Every structure is written in C-alpha cells, then in structure tokens.
Image (cartoon, rainbow, N blue to C red):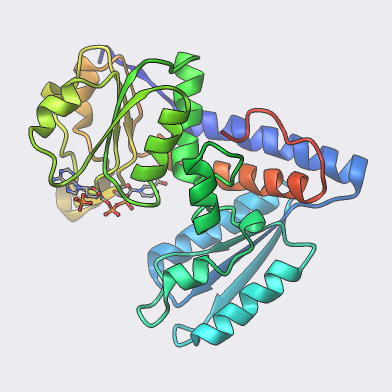
Length: 297
Ligand code: NDP
C-alpha cells in the first residue's frame, strides 16, 4: 500500500487531549466547566450508541454532560420547550439534538430553535450563513474533522483541486465551504454529476460523502491524491458477520493515493472530538475568552 495512512483515531486522541487541557485551564483560571447537552428523542439503536459515546467522551474531557432522553412520542412543543430551557441555562454551552428525529417532528424547526451560539453541530441556519460568508461560526463536526486532518497533512491547501462527492447539508456542502475558505478550487459532485470518474480524477483532494459502500475505485483517483473517506457503511462480511466499509474501495484507492483515511479509524473518531472542541469554543465565546488555537476552522 503506497499511500500514507491518515490515522484519524490517533489524531482524534490528540484533539481530545488538547480539549481536556483547555477544559482544565478554564476550570482553574476562570471557574468554568464547559457543558454539553445532548437530546435524544426515541430509541433508534444507532443514535443510542452515538449518544452514549458522546456522553462518555464529554465526561472524560472533564466537561459536564447533560443527557435528555425523550419518549419517541414527545410533542414538538415539549421538545421546543426543553430547547428553550437549555438555551437559557448558563451551565449549558453546547446543545446537540441527535438526528434523525421521529417523522412527526420538524427537524429544521427544531434545529433552528437552538441558540446559534450553542449550536455545536453547526446546523442552525445562522451558522450555515456565517460559514457560507466566511464569518466566524460554529462549524459542523464531521467536515471540521476532515479539514483538520487535511491541514495537518498538507499544511496549506491553497490552490489545490478539491472534489467533494455528496452535497448533504451536514457533510458535503459545509465541507465544500471549508475547502473554499482554505482557497481550494472546489467541485461538488452528486448523483446527477456527469462523468463522475473523470471529475474525481481531477482531484488533488477527494472527499467521499456518499453513503454507498466502496463506490469509488482506485482508477477514479489521481496518483498521489489525498482521499478522505467520510462514508460509514455496514456490509455483510464473512460468516454472516457485518463489517464497516467506507465510500471508497480502500484496497485499490490506497494503491494510487498519496494519503488516505481508513474506515473505521479515519473520519469517524474525529467527529466526536470536534464536537468536544466546538463545546469548548462555544464556552470561550460565551464568556468573552480567547478561543483555543487549532480547535476550529
Ligand atoms: P446523504 O444521504 O444525506 O447524502 C449523500 C450524497 O451522496 C447526496 O448528495 C447524493 O446525491 C450523493 N450520492 C448518492 N449516490 C451517489 C452516486 N451514485 N454518485 C454520486 N453521488 C451520489 O448522506 P450524508 O452526507 O449524511 O452521509 C454520507 C456518508 O457519510 C454516509 O455513509 C454516512 O454514514 C457518513 N457519515 C459519516 C459521519 C462520520 O462521523 N464519519 C458523519 C455523517 C455522515 P444527491 O444529492 O443527488 O441525491
């Protein structure tokens, strides 16, 4: 495998250590404890796993973790009332509503009811607008993690051709904005893109956020390119066991790429690390304190 492996697990551990250091400083110097509230509606098994993991890592970083588990039938007005309470709570610096929400709840309405300063997922329309206009915002965690790894690997990204495959609001679009902010020439590809293989072959940086197992083969990758695989897909493995794969075919892409993230152990661990980083950033901003360097875009 000629490509350098970008180890997201190790990188995320370094980000978490930096977060924990800053949390200690906030407590010792300012008597502040950054607090993250996570709201889960219903019992979706994958969401339960994510919420547990978020709570555990928040506590390990020395922050306060507030979990709100609501019944699947919770009404919109009750959920909005909880968010209003969290918006007003000075001990809560970050609020995350775990998606997807049950179908009877309007996700856009719910997300846009979070105080933008506490919107550590970066999905509030104000944060989307701020990011799109190059202003200080809360940055969505998964693309932020990808950007951190790219900056760490390359230093400057200026002038590089970046192709983002996927145009979702949570990954593809904010990823493209961040790469543009770092002066890449950005192409966003999606399911209607013509000659996708050709488009991908033009990328110095190829970000795959599609949700289709191993869709991108090695011969779509420019020799020496950096491949960031956001995809998390569970597929049937040997002896009926399931395994996780990304959106790129790791074996063939790693033969051609200059650097590549694995799945698991690439982008995934960075997402929660960036959530913790965003909570610390929100706490600093709320208290007029200098933000830690290197923990936001
Ligand atoms: P969405 O389903 O919201 O978006 C997928 C995007 O891929 C869409 O823009 C879609 O295009 C595009 N697409 C689908 N099929 C094709 C195709 N054949 N060719 C080109 N483009 C295609 O997914 P998300 O953005 O939420 O997630 C993407 C992946 O990232 C998933 O595997 C998800 O599990 C993973 N993920 C991982 C995270 C992490 O922490 N590592 C966090 C979030 C997501 P169109 O718009 O035209 O339909």
